[in-house]
Length: 108
Image (cartoon, rainbow, N blue to C red; front, side, top):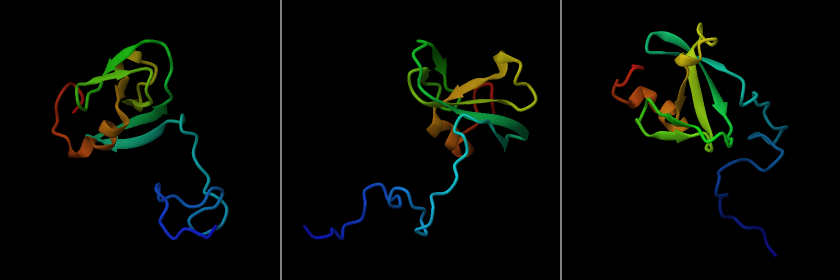
């Protein structure tokens, strides 16, 4: 069968190769915190994998529920990790769109 000239659905390079055809780019650990400057403060953010704790959180971006059974982003002030009360669980898309959202809630 012949080769298809249609573009790939995901738009990603062929598995195992980077965009230039070389080795794939190195990825950071998705669970490792990343420091982000936002709203005049330094925040630490990390991706969380789904788990079955049954907990439900309130997303500060959209005020919707974030279940622990879906992947999401946890954000906290970089200087206050030891204080569990300062952590907030965001939908990943809400965290990505935080600059385009109107300030609201207790985190703006």
